[in-house]
Amino acid sequence: MPTPLRCDPALFEKDLTGQVIIVTGANSGCGLETTRQLVKQKATVIMACRNETKGQQAAQDVGGVFVAPMDLASLESVRNFVKVFLEKYDRLNVLVNNAGIMMCPYGKTQDGFELQMGCNHLGHFLLQQLLTPLLLQTAETTGQPSRFIALSSVAATETSMSKGIPDIDLEDLNWETREYHEVQAYSASKLANYLHANHAATQYPADKLLCVSVHPGWVRSNLDVHAFAKMFGTSWFGRTMSTGLRNVMQWKGDMISAEDGAQTTLHCILHDTLDPGAFYSQFGIYKRPEDRAGGWPLTPMPNPNATPEKAAALWKASVKLVGLAA
Image 1 (cartoon, helix red, strand yellow):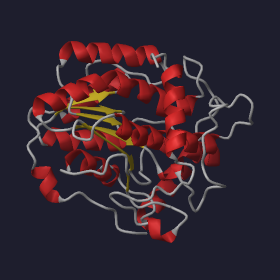
Image 2 (cartoon, rainbow, N blue to C red):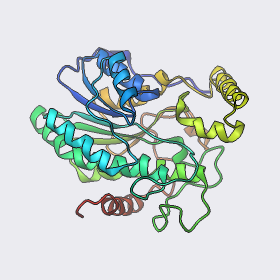
Image 3 (cartoon, helix red, strand yellow):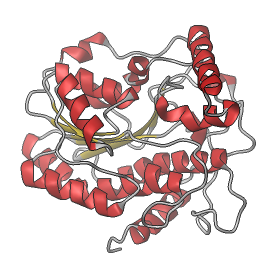
Image 4 (cartoon, one colour):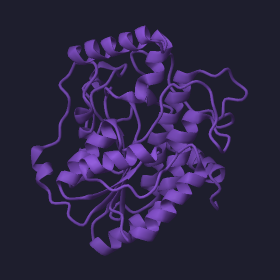
């Protein structure tokens, strides 16, 4: 496998004193490693986590800030998190929509959305919409563009393992008229993350808000718990087999550490220039050999269904679904 892309070490010397950054899902995996590095650079990192106990413990461990729990499966919870945050802070330099769930059994959010689309896209969409006024205001104050970073995935594209090219059925986002397929549902939600950031880049001036999406790599984390459970089950033996396979995959270089997985996000936070709307990718299992080494950015985004028209249609549908005025 290719060597993981890593940030220029000079970027880790930047002083981020005074910057306020929100990272969702910051108590584990890439979110935790992203937070750990940003805190080292003296940023104030707000750790937006579903589990209050785990969020508070992680904040204590790495020096982040926990203001309120946020469950992306509840739009009310997202709104409450934003309310509490805005009562405490008057600036926001960067929003990182990092949290996610992967290949879980069929279920619905508290608002009736298919679980993966609801958590990975719609909850995050509402969060970005509610916080964008402060992102823009902060850019006016600092004279520097704020940033919005959405974690997408190689799963949003045609890969060496996928069956067909991922797409989003806007007429059946909740999988109510089709047989549910957890892998396809995950791919659709990750394509939605890319389309969200890509269309956001057309809605705001790049000198006020830079919007990009990221594939962090195939990261060793708890994100794949459902995929491994489906293969091996949840018994002691199954969990042992899952751990063993993860060890082999990391040894072979197919799976990377959370620290390596955070590198693409950190690059997009710290680098002076970004291509608005672009897809920044760690190496991945892309179908085309020329894409497999990744790229900062990787262009074109390897999915012919990732069109501006699809992005605009998803944006319009999302505004309605999360209860915002059109």
